[in-house]
Length: 340
Image 1 (tube, rainbow, N blue to C red):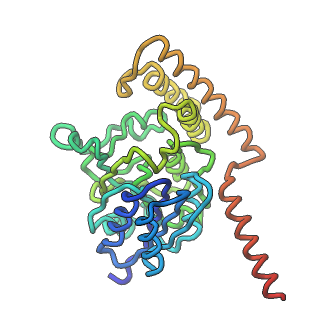
Image 2 (image 1 turned 135 degrees about the vertical axis):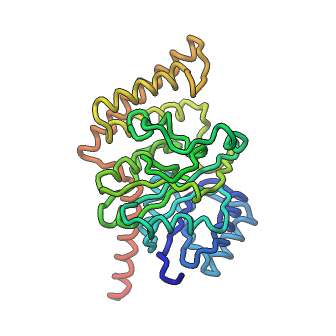
């Protein structure tokens, strides 16, 4: 058991309290013998009891606790990767419930098959737990789930009960070989804004260039609590900002990764579901609501197109750049002190 690969468990967090503490407790109770925990904390302030707990487990060496003064989910993921040491890098959310065998369920896939570069775990959303049994369970995803233009409307891993190759993973339960980052240089795109919807999909689509497979394992499961505050909920889903960033992020993923035909398929499905409100979105079909959503759809596309054009001179990794600059300041300061 001692030769099992080191797993770096990275927990980005923003504005979470008891749920964060409980998530850390579940990680520390794992029966896997070789792991580290990195908490990338973007919360301005914690409740006193949570603050005390984080300080205690940090002092005891049970976790590494990093405090940041900016908030970006993809930025936090990149920050954690740069400070991790594991052969396997595993991301969970700050509001999850784990069983003790969770880490081993991820690790065994990498040990059994060298072609696997990423593992997508099963996610039981708390609000969907009543739907996950009986007739709603399926063995394999339909073939359309491997088409990057329309996959997003067929992938629902909570109902899928057989291991299989997939196109993407849920950001609250996904792991990767370190090679993905160190050998191939992939990073999470920090231009995905707001709730960062589609940031993990964008990252997983780019894994295709490495030749590695993304493997779904239902045994690597967790319960995602989906707390209404904290996490990515820095803006209301009903706000104008959320609507704009939602469409921006979807279009950015498409413009970066899809062929012309695949992109058209995504745009059509996005319009049918999110704008017209047809199933599975089931939104209001009133004229005012449809016109309003159509405006955000067009603005989101134009905004994403502008982001792609700007990438000709700016890759958008602004938070990683801030981190590198701060590290350089520390190095220069230490060098100056040594010289004196």
